[in-house]
Length: 279
Image (tube, rainbow, N blue to C red; front, side, top):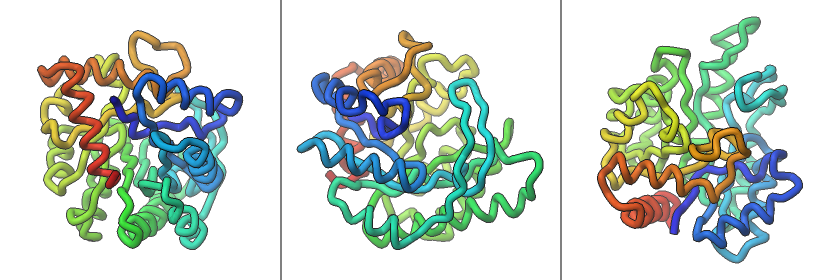
């Protein structure tokens, strides 16, 4: 069994075949946690989870890039973000669904700050939404799913997230760094707070050597696997839409880097996910 701890089958990329995609994953022994990035995708994550008796779960939250409107144009995505203010009561009501196991993805993203806006204002919007989601995760005892992306060649957003987590006492709460690509030095600080770190398809095609350093740094009891589908498709399926069943390729590569068998890494990462999400 494997556990894709961070998927987006609730996104439009799967609007024609979401249920079939999830069933394909379940048939291959893969459980899936679909993660929201704003209220509509969060509702869709819950809706999908409720269509399956087990094996499909949901995390709900507001992504930092949706706290203000901007056009994102990167290798795997191009769209206009819809500005949303985090409505605590709406998200709290949604989070009470028993299939909801986490709050997020939330955090800070300084990589894509707009050039024509006030940096401090935008950072303030992101931090405000992040703080409210930390509060909600603690109030309902849900795992906190953290997005962290810093300005290029820096750890600025990651350092700010670290400071906020410390201030909010999150060392006493369950949290995971999703798709972390920052420095090993800062990852060590997050792990010191008791956090988990989740690896995806990037580890199969990273040429910088940084992801391998991160994998080597993290102990087996703190590692998870994810796809972040439909993005970051692992080798050997680069160029295709990513999906939860592809998480096996990340797990295979992770097993090689950690010097353990595929079966061992599957069991370890699945047990870690169950601890994180209290399953």
